[in-house]
Image (tube, rainbow, N blue to C red):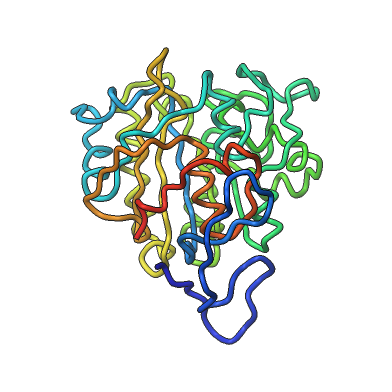
Length: 302
């Protein structure tokens, strides 16, 4: 079991278990009681979402040399499925356990395309933890209009009224990716939960697999070499929002000290599984029946 890395004699923030707390059984499907950790002690979780590539276009592809080397070193889930098409509903599923009835890539301005549901951001803040959304190419914090290679449909937190209603809070939490390097420099400056969306080229949406692979080859080593990953028990998850057509099997790679090494799993998972894994690790209540009933990725963790 993963141990909590809490130093000193201070009390933990609300929602966090103290070191040595017994690990109970996960929440039973269909209940609304708070989840309890299956794998406690994840100090940080970083999620990176790439775009529109089924696993058949990634696994074994020589244009994805870095991605495949990372998958071989750590854990690759080969039975991982996106939940629908197109992009936006998958981003909402990853962060709220629901597509919120949204079936297209609509933009949020004007209130005509919002997801009035609870999100993982609400759960994280309620537990006393921190979070940030890092969007590459976003010209300023909390911008809900497309700009250059920044696509708001890949920034799910701007669809949640609970995030956008308080603009000051939104500008602190939903920020350009340029802030990530500074936040990554220290254990206490990196949020507990980070969600990263590369721009439309680096996420493979408008550009090649090789371009996305090169971006990950530049960014992922910095994450894995950061204090949060070398001195704490943290997890990096890389996945794709959706496949193409009927092929919605996408790659999911877990890396960092919390992930098993040299491991491959063919177990059937979905985007709800990744969300459920985070909930269980931090003892957060499930957001919907979809994530409550999802099989977590805990067997891929140390």
